[in-house]
Amino acid sequence: MNAFEWYNPTKLVFGADKVGQLGELIEPYGKRILLVYGGGSIKKTGLYDDVMFQLREIGATVHELSGVEPNPRLSTVNRGIDICRTEDIEFILAVGGGSVLDASKAIAAGAVYNGDVWDFTIRKAVIQDALPLGTVLTLAATGSEMNGNAVITNWETKQKRGLGSKLVYPRFSILDPKLTYTVPRDQTVNGIVDIMSHVFEQYFTLTTDIPLQERLAESVLLTVIENGEKALEDGTDYDARANLLLAGTYALNGTLPNGVTTDWATHGIEHEVSAVYDIAHGAGLAILFPNWMKYVYKERVSKFVQYAVRIWQIDPAGKSDDEIALAGIEATRAYFTRIGAPATLGEVGIGDEHLERMAEEATRFGPIGSFKLLSQDDVLSILKASL
Ligand code: NZQ
Ligand code: ZN
Image 1 (cartoon, protein in one colour):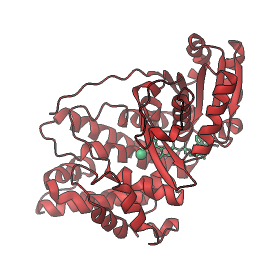
Image 2: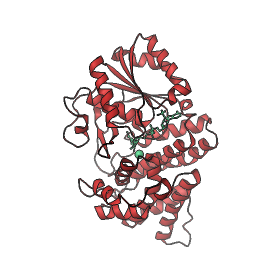
Image 3: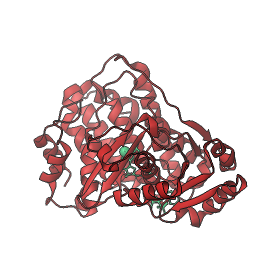
Image 4: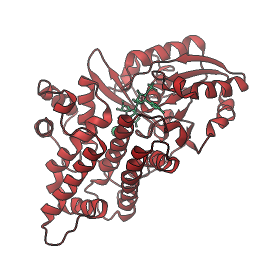
């Protein structure tokens, strides 16, 4: 097991109707609030009114940044930064899915930085300060509610890049499973795939003798697989939505990578695909991940055998290790297909026009991944296998 340090300062407030605690959670941070939300789902569901009621109760002055896009854009982040500066904002409240949360984190860091917020994504500057932020999450997927990461897109240059800092962890995140009842089927599917993919990135490791980390990861995977299907059958199944929501948080709040060398190559490749084509992150991952698995599994077949047996109950009797591993990978693809996720780039309207550029961008700082270190050519092979 590798040495590690772990600190996660986000306070989780989980359960039905917990939005009722919003006022008291925000009050210590100030009264001038920037409320950030997406394309309008929170107005349709009534959540906007509930949030505004809470903010009025504490006498807050509320400024709004609405219309944050899925795959949030740098231009929108800059609009938020302008509001923070001109209105002397004290606290940012993000209400929505991962895109709204990520945009809010970038705004929080950019508002107190004397330069271009994009600098943080290209490693030109390190986040030294940030406005405090809190979140009300409405979609189980990214884990952004309890981590210090954000991903934003520069639509002009077609670049999607991440930034991260301990300083942009949400001070609190409210997770009410009922708020996810209205998530449409395709976004529920994208969320399931994203959560599973976060686990894959940390589970498929060459680090050995980590039984606790492995079983924690397997537990998150099994929970998502079971409850994902239940949530798709009945979107208002409270327990299914609650289990999915919590699994999403645990998948990417720093629990799983403790002591483990993680991979993250597939996320790097997917970000290049969605930078150019603006497809949903989960859809891109569903297409790419089984192909990454097939490309790398021979690096440590035993890990993929364990995955096949423990997660997909593949019967090992009479099969070679390669056959068991491949059966596990096929079961992954079959599950994604069963829940309605795409399997090829062609299905989401992507041809071979920009694959070279994506492979080049994905490896701009050198080879990626750790289970198998992937060169530009390796990435191109995975993209071609995904057509
Ligand atoms: O914009 P609105 O109207 O709110 O609608 C959204 C959006 O259209 C809708 N939605 C959200 N909650 C809803 C709802 N509709 C009805 N009822 C609700 N309760 O769902 C759509 C997608 O929302 P979005 O926030 O884009 O989805 P998600 O949470 O999957 O976030 C995806 C973004 O997060 C990044 C991705 O790259 C992508 O940009 N990621 C962030 C990570 C992180 N911060 O740690 C890690 C991830 O790997 C990922 O890269
Ligand atoms: Zn992801």
